[in-house]
Length: 254
Image (cartoon, rainbow, N blue to C red; front, side):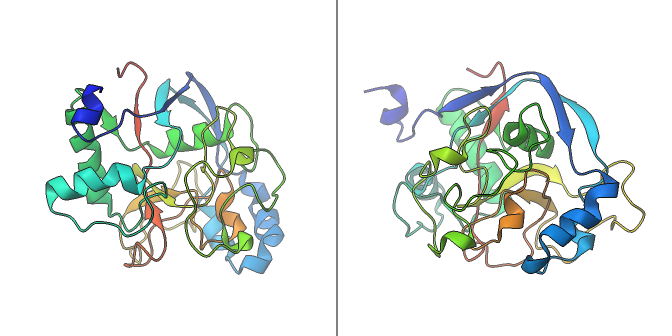
């Protein structure tokens, strides 16, 4: 039995994302077209303007977990810290997680795996690079949305699925469930991108938490599957809206 199992935790299945360039966001001149394409979702054009402008951003190499943190991985942490135990099956992503609890889990896990301070939430740019790879694809799997590649509202499940259930929706690096199933915290606080349109708000006072979430959850529409889509936790019931987490670490983390 490995030391991780003795401690009641599992080693992370890391995916290596190489040093490279991210084509981040959406060109300002394309925002109106994007909003029109997803008009049936009822999302106003103002929400898409937060993605502008398109920028070429250097992202150093890093590691990101292949799947979202599961209920089974979360339970030892919850027991150790006196938090409520989730009721979903062990292989489903944990949801109902606050940003503070997500960061506490990262610290707790790093200490138990012998890498204190090294496991963390991904930065927003890291998350988008893991989803896009080296090109400007719209979804982690390519440019065309197809039902069955992610657990979003169009699939009709109405709840989470076991992590990794949609291998056809993998990103260029083999990261799974970057669209749908559970929404994912990042370490990045919301702010407009440099050079954003003037009407983009400097803060989102209506958000439950100031940190960006990415990817969408089982109850979200297909627009949240887009690699560029920035959003937040706008409701207090984080279990109902499906907010969970995925781990990241610097490239040299053991």
